Length: 332
Image 1 (cartoon, rainbow, N blue to C red):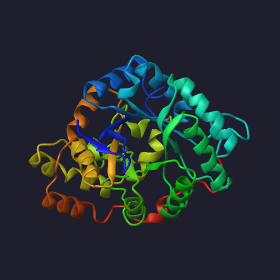
Image 2: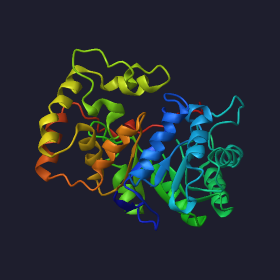
Image 3: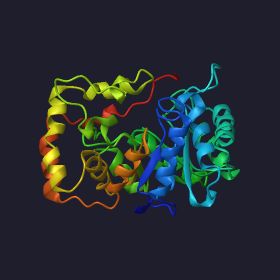
């Protein structure tokens, strides 16, 4: 495993982190989830990402039980707040009430006294940013989080939050966006802003919800048990890529990956890590073997000629529009 600073902060994290969106508490049984966490630890991963909303709060509980016997100081645990975690009007968003109550729930489920990074899962247009940032500052100053981060915020929103964070004497160190060979919407505006501010990207879905593994073949039905057949939320995200023009291009990556001595999924994870503003790529898994395969992307250096060929293959289908970084106009 290789390690990187999270932005320009002093926090060092594994350049491949383990995330349990969709899988823990939902797609796989707890024994299998625990086995994946153990495989991550055995592979040198020290950074674990979750959120209060995942699997209706169950994902945090599963991760907490899986990590409870580990040395806490040797781990970096991230979680998030924004999406609904209950039926009440205030069980969502980034109000002071929800943030202060949610951090306590997350810590209880994770069986820890603090998280390393507490992240705003989306931007809340119904709460003044000052209120949100003051609540985050109180979370940090009370010792319940070391740093704060955001997820899927636009460049101008990140800039405004960073200004307030400095005034409140807390460290906004990360953004967690979707990023892959297919989805590059952060490159035009978010990445330049974050480079200027010293904020690192912790990217999710580097293998395009599984499309970049090559297991989805043009003209064929998705494999049984794959994310495209998951009725608990996985199929919604992947559907945009299940087009023959996209899948045909993915198949054209195979000889390039073989020449580089990589699987398609390793190539996809290594590709996002070539961006110097990316501090870590989040991988998920339903089987330990998937973890062991994808961590082999750590430390891989892709040659400029290979990167140029990848750009050429996906040129007509890649999403670049920065306006695709969106948060709900109203709380869900």
